[in-house]
Length: 278
Image (cartoon, rainbow, N blue to C red; front, side, top):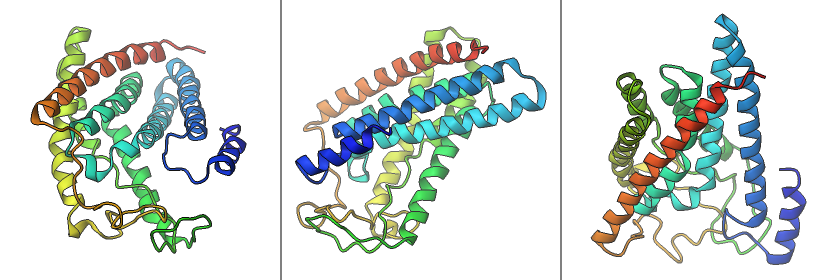
């Protein structure tokens, strides 16, 4: 993370203003964040696995908190492809299936908390809402050009994805599926995650592009100073990332397969976290 700072400064001097989140310096930065997330989970998990009683309960809460931060980092990493205008396209759901389930399920199952998935998703949601509601309170002005939006305060990230709903579904499923075979668990969990997420996020996306969402609560009226919204494109219109209905369903099927594989990988990871003793 520290190394990414001078790299990013050099990148701006050489190539100008960033036009993408996934620039090389940002990838270095986020890779460092992910490494810290994983290392912190390992450190807490090692002590938690050796503890009992109240100490274990406290460590488990801290473990779940780090899991929520990890989900926040993962969702930020793919945020360019999960904006409100993209959430009626299957590609956005495929990308979320790549980023979120492996962390959400891996940490929740390693914690052995009965509501682990919901707790992690709630922490993620609270963290994103905090920056959405707090950052715009502070004055800020653009120092680089071009400036397309009149910005006078910090611009936050978008409203959080509604991961708390599929997380609740996974917690409820786990009560019935804990004794199932591993691949049956992964398949059922992948279906529950994607179906629940698409069901709520698709409808909520329709609200996010509507006028009632353009306020401080939902934050859809915020645009970065370099954003050409309203000039080069309509920010309140869905973008079709798939050209045909058949392509949409093909991508959505791939998203389901990715969700199942991600959850199976998460289960293997959670087993390894539970075995750490020092």
